[in-house]
Amino acid sequence: MKHFIIGKGKVGKTLLSSLKACGEELGRDIHRSEVIWLTVPDSVIKKKVKEIESSLAEKHILVHCSGFFPASIMKNGKTNKLVSLHPAFSFSKPLDIFPQGIFWTFEGYGFVFGIFSDLIQKWKGKVKRISEKQKELYHIACVFASNFPIVSLLIAEKLFEKSGIEFEDIKKGLVHPVCEKVIGNSRLVDVLTGPAKRKDMETILKEIEVLKEKDFEISEIYRLLSNFVLKNI
Image (cartoon, rainbow, N blue to C red; front, side, top):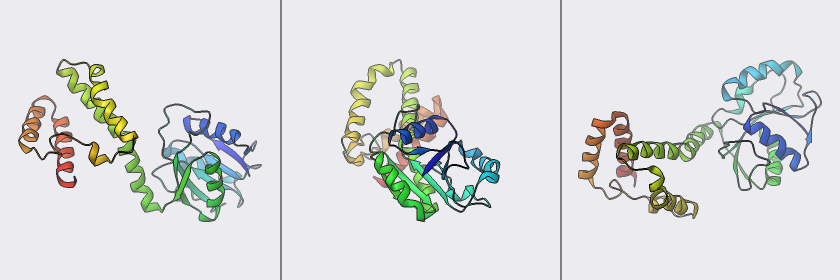
């Protein structure tokens, strides 16, 4: 099958080079292709489908790579072969090929699942079919896993700065061991430490009060995260 890519951002460029690397054919335009990839920002997927609708035919498979939105947002009057294929990977820059071991989710027109399963196997990845409802929570989980740990470190960096300590001096002894344990497949609950894990309510309440005086927004984040640990761990 011939592939045509619309959108040349980080994911689009990586997809292009990855298709070439595994010997997939690339079409010169929509008419001479079967798989049409929309690697564009989520907010313009619908608009882009409308723009190309006149060029679409029943043979075409439309694919977007949004983690949250379902395949059905590409609904049109020409083809019902709609697929959402999302890599659970954080792209900070274009890559020469998708790294091995990436987990992908497939949602949409099930009769073409085999095509994309075979493709992802060529990239040494793993794919699972999920429903629209599962997809919503899946992407929120991706945000928590890949984005919010960085937010927590940014907050920590800000607080270290206010306490007169360089974050760089803390990384090796505090941050690196945690990351290594997670990478080493330790159970997350076993990696977790701190006052909430110990059920040390006196410390938690006092620290919340200190934060309220310095930064109310951070105090609320601290309170909510501590409550989650107290109730669930």
